[in-house]
Image 1 (cartoon, helix red, strand yellow):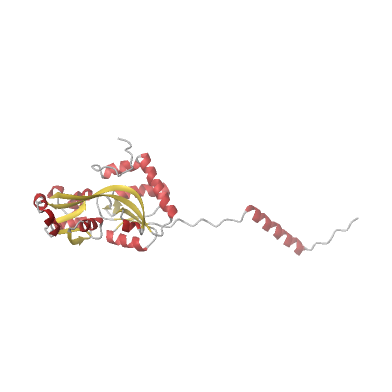
Image 2 (spheres, helix red, strand yellow):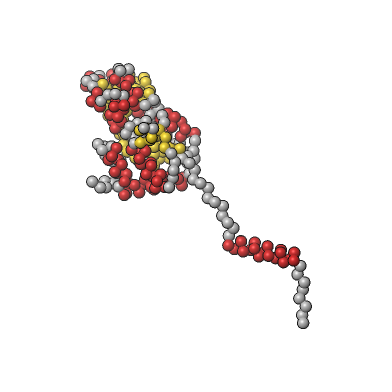
Length: 271
């Protein structure tokens, strides 16, 4: 009979640990739980029918688009309606900020990533009813008149770039409409699609003002601040493209901007 070597309990325990370690290495150690997605700060501005507060809740074309995109991506981020100047400032200095409607310019491309276009904005000059022909007759003299527009907006930028005299910058379009009707300035620069609702909010009718001149047509985008994960931006872009393919984008656009065409690259779907 061959004698078997004596194995101590300590040696058996050590061998068991070695076997367990080898098994874990082969099977793979438990993976750490995935980090939750970064929360987005989503901002729109008081600018009917594009985005606005209705009974304290956000509403409007880009709000409805964003809500559907959030559902498609399985996200629960909240949408806030705040002054444009504040939203723009936050987007300059913080990551994970989404602005729901902004015109794409070379300067803004240095600090934001754009998805879209979402809709077309028609930047124009308006005057009190009965004055448009008189002001157009001034020729280049029209540039010396007092003008007003929303503070920090593309309306200010385009008007000044074309040589107009912007003397007043307001917090919102409603205030600008009221100031025009009170003769605080002669020309009001804003988007054609927003003038009617702004006048209504100020207590006036769309027919109380006249179009003097269309300055430009601009593509309006979603814009993400620097530092926002590229994967999130790509997911948003892919979901937005899917909405354009399946017709849900077109349905929302027709609901809020029935008189205006789709931006380039959008196929007409449905009735």
